[in-house]
Length: 169
Image (cartoon, rainbow, N blue to C red; front, side):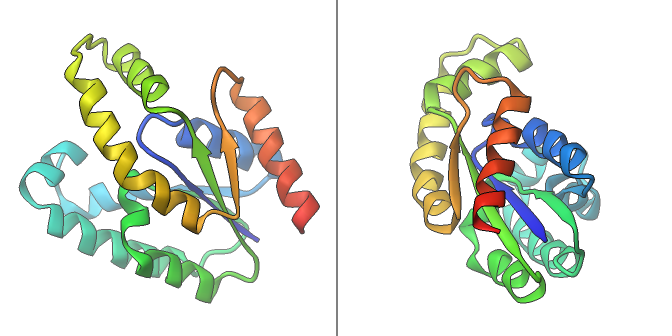
């Protein structure tokens, strides 16, 4: 069984993915980290600013390679949902695949990012809203389950994900 965790930046994908992997005694792979290392850039922002095509190409290559793994929770980058081929690799290679959309509202995401980055810039709100509008529908189209992450503890969200998978398994 493999689990893809999708969602927008700041939705809690990473924290929930690592918690879920620990609960289920599964491996965890954070795709953005692998892709960033593959690009040779030092930050995701730099790659997106200067070479977004490189990011997308590397993301596809990494998805193709790691989709052969089993018993793994994959934490996908926010832009992962923008390329159908990423999902195709995982569907073709996974014995059983669950795609979980961790959903948070744009305001909650903006508040989390402001807190994490210690940046009170109101422009974050506008940028997050644009990203959210672009990716929310794609996430919903690809997700087996949508799990809300508003004012919940990480462990509670991970437990909710596990309950949904058990019911469907």
